[in-house]
Image (cartoon, rainbow, N blue to C red; front, side):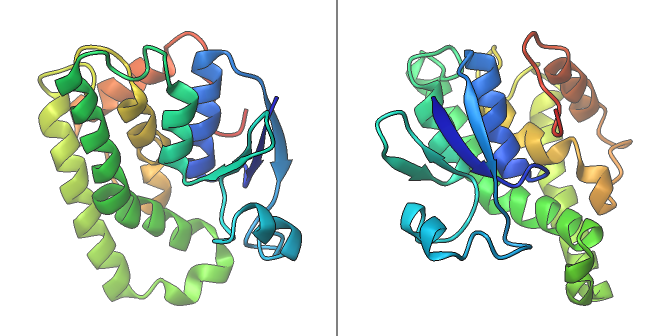
Amino acid sequence: MITLYEQADSGNCYKVRLVAAHTGRPVRRVSVSSRDGSTRTPEFLARNPIGKVPTVELEDGRFLAESNAIMLHLAEGTSLIPADAYDRAKAYEWLFFEQYSHEPAIAVRRALSVYPERAALATPERLAQLLEAGNKALGVMEARLTKADWLAGDAFSVADIALYAYTHTADQGGYDLAPFPGIRRWLDRVAALPGHIGLLD
């Protein structure tokens, strides 16, 4: 069985659990966190020198980090990775978008809002900058989701999982999804899929 080292309320860790749920792979969960220093211990750094979650230990004892890399590994050979070469490339495009344009704004603003120890970093200027960047990223998603049910191709994929993880909690960071009806319908579609699990399930 795969062992997932995670912080339960992390969207990046949630991505891994969602892929596992949708592919029927059991996961043993081990709680670690940067908040209590457990990701900085020598034992954990031996598993992942970056000292971040998620990190997984595979059945053969090897370790893998970075949420999107883990997702792709677990989804290998399943319908979560599009069979069509172009659709597959579009899925990867959305994964890069998520890490470079979406997560650095939406996930970071959420973290500044929900974790008390980060409150000092939540200056009005920083929050305004993140709100603008996050709404721009949401606008890119909305443009796709007003004309398609899914982000890459015509089926649910790793692209949807990657973007769902932090978009569905965007309100916790002060984002208003009311102007994004395509995104709201997409969130409902993802949540209604068989095998779906919630962030804290």
